[in-house]
Amino acid sequence: MSVRINDIVPDFKAETTEGLIGFYEWAGGDWVVLFSHPKDFTPVCTTELAALAQLQPEFAKRRCKIICLSVDTLADHQRWTPDVKAVGGAPLSYPLIADPDLRLAKLLDMLPADAGATARERTVANNATVRSVFVICPERRIRMMQTYPMNIGRNFDEVIRVLDALQMSTEYDVSTPANWRRGQDVIIPHGLTDAEAKQRYPGGFRTVTPYLRYVADPSER
Ligand code: BEZ
Image (tube, rainbow, N blue to C red):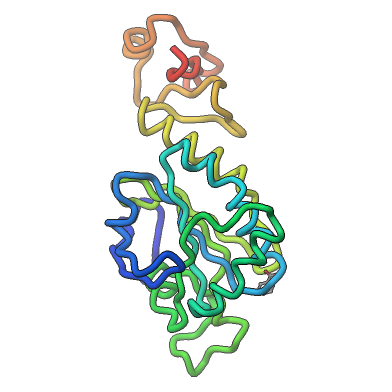
């Protein structure tokens, strides 16, 4: 199955470090960051899980839950999680899915392109999931996806930035420019005429080109 932006994430059941969960029920009405990493007991992965454990309160403030998927076993996850706390200082505060038979990795299209079609063709290296990140909205759609290589750790501040931008664009029907951060001006949607924009933003807006018009962060009004 191929998974693309705006697809609905299928519901699934999974064994996790916090018990058996049904994804939809667990997510409830919140946003979700679902990320995979290639392997337990590896250096880059340990720093990533530690970074997210430290940042978890920032995601909680944004009504966003975190869940991680690894193709390793639950027993491996349980032996590994103390290392995550030792590295980052914060205990693992989100569930870690065990997926030793690759069922979810395949369902969510998280295996590398050279993984082959059957388990017989796979090696230990390409059995690992890629470093995927999905930001999923409360309507269960994938609103952002990133794929990183095995040896490069992700920037989770960027995931928070995108989450802020997605929540802003969903709530206020605006777009956000490059490197946007909360509090900065946002972009008026292309489909809105100037007359409609004047009605929607009586406080005024700034036109740079006919198709690039900025307005102050509407959440701060
Ligand atoms: C790492 O996290 O460092 C790693 C994971 C899988 C393969 C190689 C390195």
